[in-house]
Length: 114
Image 1: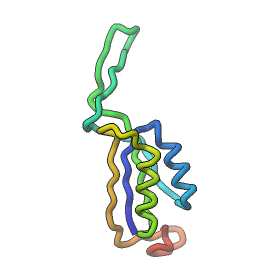
Image 2: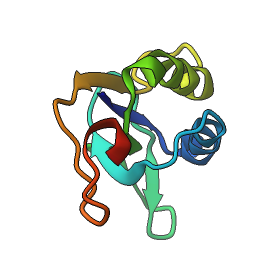
Image 3: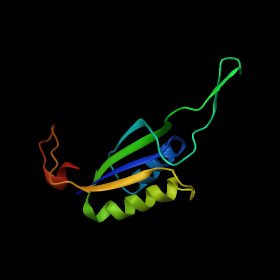
């Protein structure tokens, strides 16, 4: 099993999740995150237009899912297809091995738990 953690621009999250579900992914966790990387942070106008500042961190979304080994490359390719425009600093995808998984309710283990 593989754990895939993708940090992606917030505007791409729903479309990416929808496409992952079409691949047969039955579950994932998505949460808002902030980070600092290579991309330029946008200027924000505050008050009545009198104050301008640049936030220290970018707003992103993080998608976390665990898949069978055979699905990992398909999932990564789908995330790249839906989130990349070719610009630096659009996010990261991390893939790591999972040595065990347990479903608390059904008490299933391994691939059956995902």
